Length: 248
Image (cartoon, rainbow, N blue to C red; front, side):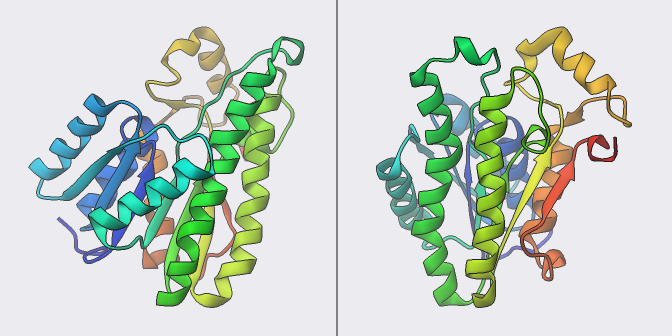
């Protein structure tokens, strides 16, 4: 096990599956004490057991993230478990696709609450503490469809486009105080969440120069880069890990 992140703690939202789980395991492998959050306690506890079995440190917080109160509650619980947060990975998100005219107000609010409001207030809660210590890394998970128009993906893309702008704004706000804020922008990625997309998912992947979908572990590699001192001069970047979609 590497010690690149020894003595540091990380909070990964949505860390009980997919990209979040891969990132949590990778951070723990580098020595970080990882706190993961999610709604499914069984899956969350399993991730913790896997990390601990490999010699890492991890805890799980079962929580339904949906608003400012839940974000601040998660931050407080993470402090109880890990003392403080050096690395924040805003990974939790939902991505319903479909025609605009069939979108309900409830769905609209749910998407923006989890994809935008929760990261906003986690940063509001945790970034000032990073500023006091003079260091920290915040990594937001966006998407390639935040950068271009795609039929049926407007709501999801718009929520992540907001997170792109917040990433840049937070980099300007907190960077001068030693806190780096960046984002990873994945392309089509094989996870439990995308398993049900079927032919549409496969067709989207064939449009990429890579001609295949990515894996959660490949996205996690980018998260790890931004979380470590290897990215010490990287601020406000949106790192595309999208199989080359940005090039076409």
